[in-house]
Image (cartoon, rainbow, N blue to C red; front, side, top):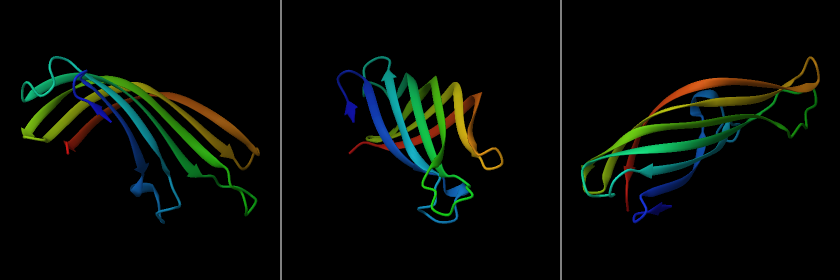
Length: 133
């Protein structure tokens, strides 16, 4: 969803990590939610700056001793940052952002038969190509 008058962009994006999967429905998959606030008037120039906040949650089938285990490992990435947006052509934009945040990883340990939680920090540099319909 995009609000052109308030310079706010909100998005909910499905995610499939194709580098870590063998089958399309095997995971990891998840949802990325993002909120972007643009400084200045939107569409008034070809270059805009913004601040953003992201929350990504990924689900991955966990390794278990039982064949019919339906539970998943989860990974949360919560970041905030800043970036620039460049208008390439009429409705075509390129966005570049630099974010920092935390990671919360919950993994089931087969050896200990319990879920373990790991936390950490991360830096994220992202490039996005957007076309407004």
